[in-house]
Length: 379
Image (cartoon, rainbow, N blue to C red; front, side, top):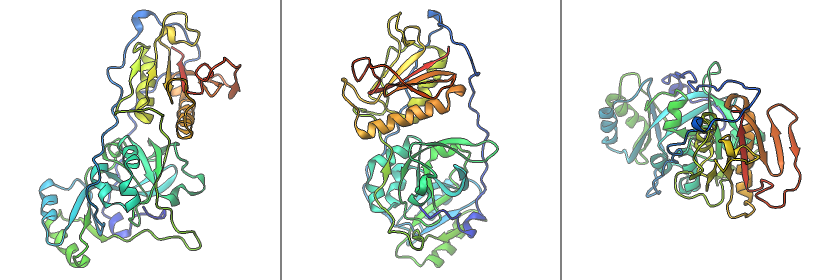
């Protein structure tokens, strides 16, 4: 990834960013809760799946970026792939986009394919590419410097008038100048980025200028081709860090889905589960409905516990950071999601105000909510 500059002029001229409106249905802002009737409870058919990422099998050096204003036809991509000197290529979505108030060169990538074009430490990090595959944004160290885009934060991305949202999942180097961040191609669709309008090409033994001419002959008219340079280190700064920094994850999470116990809840709670699990999962377990009389709303389907560890164990430092991010996201989006209150680390936050307040000692890690984030909804 680059150092915060926009895409080079030649490439930028060939990229059109058309951002779709945010189509999320917002829950009404409620001020009073109320017990749900048993017949009102619904279930989550399946928790969102965390996409699998293929293992790294080989490496490529990225040499050229070809970008157009619309999707590149598959036949043209295959012609480019067969050109003499091309060692490998991958289709990407390329755009200049606003991310967290910053203008960036952004790529939508297939994590399984694109990792082969990244520098060694980034290419080898399974956790980095799982984070991207699950919807996270991997941003350059330079863009993340100074806390502008803190790990775990959910930031607006796309057109300022109707931005989407993306979670800052990692700091990493992609080894390509002018590219500041990557997301999955699925996330790129949600942000309204062009679909498959660009190619990252490895051709280490070819003459870049000559290959660029041949690429323009096989790709659609108007496609721009530019040589890729390694990111520049700003004057006076230290050598760039190369090992990715990735947000924490819950202890004991396995597979690509979050198991749900007590899978009965109100429609509002179901919306929260789908969004939190999709944004931050997988969790080792999400515990929802319990027998009537539960004082924390589990008994009427208005609460779920998002576990950061199991068996009463204290979560690791990484899992605690993950829990902090879940709690922060829940409180920041409480009114939109219809959330009433959140409990985490023996503190409670209520949508009616007052910030985080300490709670009495209930006697165990679980009862004091050190191993899970509790979220209740108003209805």
